[in-house]
Length: 267
Image (cartoon, rainbow, N blue to C red; front, side, top):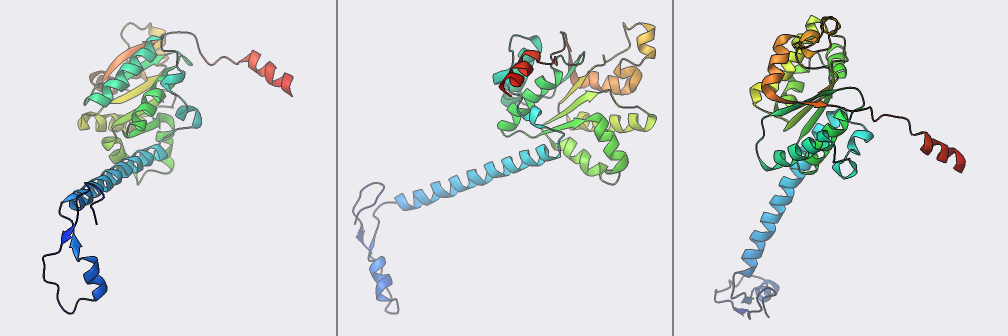
């Protein structure tokens, strides 16, 4: 009999086997390995099982955050592989996500610009790349978050903020479309301050600029900045945490007329 790993012949078991031991069992251990391959293999299998357990824990954690996020199929399908990588926003998103996976990034992104210029798509590409690599990402629509706090999450706000604190990346999408009241300002500050105190990054997409500085009076009155719509302390906090990037360009949400005509032709 030989070891199936190294090929060494088994040796006769030198141990004195007790009389009470059944003959069948004695036959099984009559010869024993002359090597330690079996012990090594058991250690390898145990280590592999532990790696698989840890990997599954990571997958479950990623899924848990994804399940409570505001993510639709369009968001999940947003990948760098299908993006126009020539644009400045996608170049930034690509570099940011790669750096995020290599080191402990604490700086976030404040992506602002007109509707349909690719802010949400860029943040979705970042989120999907990170989740594919085992990072936890929590995606929030601020208006929906505030609405849920008022209607459903009043008692669970502390639990929600624990998710906010512990996730690797928080994404607040479309900040500024909600109706802002003093109560809202307090909740938004609490949300952002939770990340600030945890020293973890967040990405914000918005149609608003951050500060009033440089804006005409009528735009300030129309509350077209985070500072005027929310508060200066929220704007200051975001400014401390995020790199600002203006997303410039025409809306990419144009209706595909040619594709629609082709569909009609095939009907």
